[in-house]
Every structure is written in structure tokens, then in C-alpha cells.
Image (cartoon, rainbow, N blue to C red; front, side, top):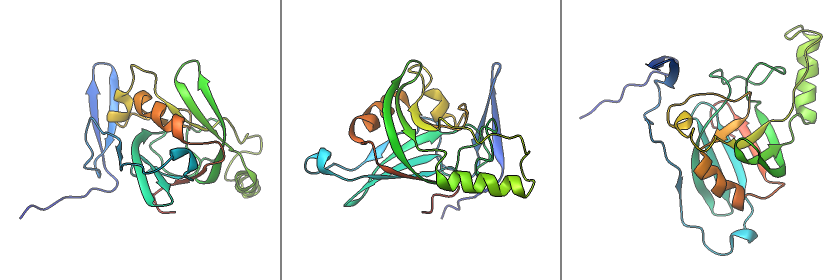
Length: 196
């Protein structure tokens, strides 16, 4: 019988040349993490989707009326899974959002812009300012999106290398597919632990 060891907080550092990568030790997902999906039945334009992103699991999961549809490996801006506090902290916000715009970014291609900051984001931001958790002059930030890596930088996702300023980044090749079938208005939930 094989026993599986789980280390929920520890991280393993790997140094390649001048680049350092941090891989969460609690995951059994190694390099070459791939998208997984079931076969979609019927006309995909008639399907209604919602997305759940887990910062702990480094995964973006797509659901439709039949349940789970696809899982894409992703990375973020910070290893800290806590909620975004303010502009410049590189954290990815947690909460309920929706896709408000699809566009092609000049550097990393397909991008799904989220409605961050929304009313709930502003409420949390104001509460934290009032409690002194963040500086009085802090700004909330904006421009949070689900977007691709650059075409030749898919390795960042394989190696859990968090490189964004708070956005969610999928592999370039996989983000092209996600971009094609996910419509504007799709609900997106971002969690620390993958639970809705």
C-alpha cells in the first residue's frame, strides 16, 4: 500500500539559471499540467457556463448545465491566496465577478476582463480602510482579467510561476480555446480553496 504525504503550507524552490520557481509542495500536479475536459454535446453557443477558480489548486474549472466541463491549469500574481487588498499587492481578488469584455491583448493575446472592482470589492476595500488594514491613500486597482501567457511562456503555468499583477493566466494555447466558447456575462467565482 502506498501512502500519500500532504504538505499544505510548505513550498519547494527550484532554481534554473537566474529564474527561481516556487512549486506548492502540497500538490501532486507536476510539470506539463494539461487541460482536461469532457466532450461537449450539442451546440456550445446554447450552453450557459460558469467558472470557478481555485487559488490553492491553481485551477480554473468551467461548468455548464450538465456539471463539470473543463479544467485549465492557471497561475496568478502572488503565492498568497488571500484576497486582494489594494492596487500593487499582486494578489488576485476573491469573490463573485462576471466577464464584461473579450479582447485580444497585444502582448498575451486572448483576454476575458472581469468586473473588478465591483460593488462588493468597493465595500470590502472601504471596510479595510476604515479598520486601518490598508493605508488611507491606497487605491483599489482595476484591470483584473483571465488571460493567456505569452506564446513562448507556457512554462510559467507548468512550473506554478506566478507572474501577473493579480490576473489569472492560462497557457496561450488553452486560453485561445477558452476565449472562443466563453461569452461575455459568464459568472466567475474566485476562491482561496476552490469551494464556491
